[in-house]
Length: 216
Image (tube, rainbow, N blue to C red; front, side, top):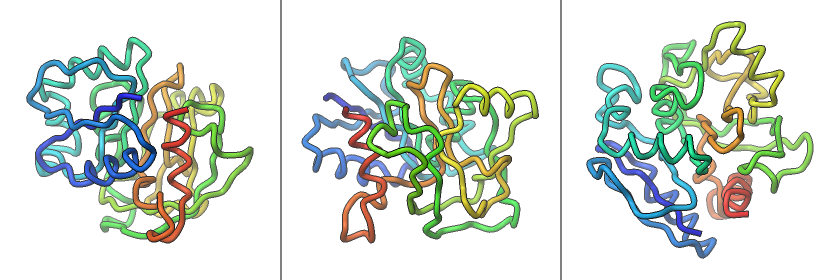
C-alpha cells in the first residue's frame, strides 16, 4: 500500500508514523507541504506537531499550504486520510471534518496516556478493534477541546461519525469526543497519538491496530 505522510514546518510526529508503517511493510514516503501535487497514493497521513508554530490558530496556516488543495481533492474523491492531533486540527480548518479544536478546558498542555472507547469499530481505521473496545493511547496537546454546535453533534452521533471517545475527558471536549470520521468514513481525525503506542517498547500496542486497519 502506498501511503504519503504530509510534512509541514513544525511537524514532529511524521517520523513516528513513518516508522510504524514501515514495520508493517508498507510503501511510505514523505510529502513536502510546498508540493502542489504528489504521486498516486492509497492513503495520506497528516501527522501531529505544531505546523507553522501554531501561529494564528492551530492548523489555520497549514490549511493554505500548496499541497492541501490536492489533499482535499484526494479526500473528496474517497481517498483515506488520517489526521492525528495537529493533523485533526488541519482537517477541521479545511472543512473536511466538522467542528473545531479549542484550547483545553484547563488552559494547560496535557501529555499523558488516556483511556478511550472505540465507539465505531467499522470504519476503515478501526476494523481491527472489537466491539466496545477500550484502549490506552497517549495525548499531547494544548488545543484538543473538540467543539461543535448541538445540531452537528447530534448528526455525528446519529450517523456513527464519533469514532473515539474519552473515558475521562481530560480537555473538556463536547460529548467526550476524541476522534471523528467523515460521513463516508474515509477521513478520520483524532487527537490521541496511536503512533506513540504501536510497539511493546512504548508500553502497549493499542495504536498499532489503527494502522493495521488502515492497510486492511
